[in-house]
Length: 185
Image 1 (tube, rainbow, N blue to C red):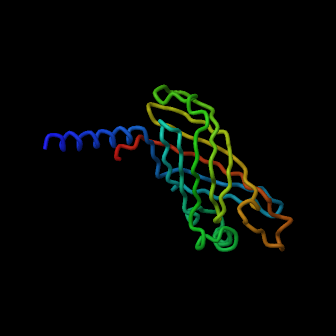
Image 2 (image 1 turned 90 degrees about the horizontal axis):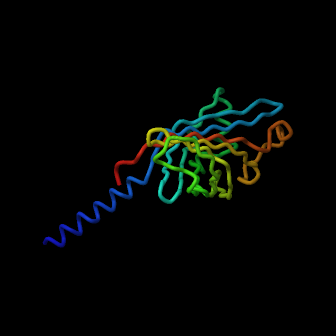
Image 3 (image 1 turned 90 degrees about the vertical axis):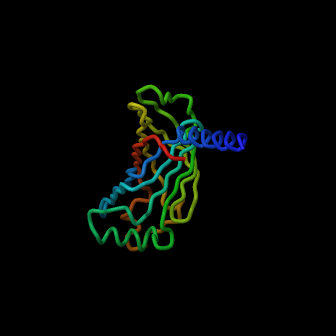
């Protein structure tokens, strides 16, 4: 009986210690921007979910495509129906790693420029990418900011021939994640 209790306490301590290494946000901001002769295209979501493991440097995020909001309702409708086909491909994910994790001291306030690499899945297509990121530590919490550009063709996002010459073939993506310590396993 005592060994069972000891084993149970040991497992609970392991789970709790693992949770102490994880940081989480459910209100991450992701936006994209494309400057075009026809019309600039811009949208933002504040509902990205992301987990960062301080010990391993693993980072993941997920965002529902329909959560992006546009200034114009018609643009949002075209985005979801014609370009990203959000009923067929409802979310985008990123699974990656902070490549130079040793640069970050999670116990010391400061700004740390790092490189993040991983796999971005969008519109049902997965592509490997690497981007610079700024990790800012403030009182034990982490802010992560990154900006990168993706070619639409890599994700099989087609532009209708009618507007083909007036829409950019790339999109700039900005990510802002405000992590807090994850207290539950």
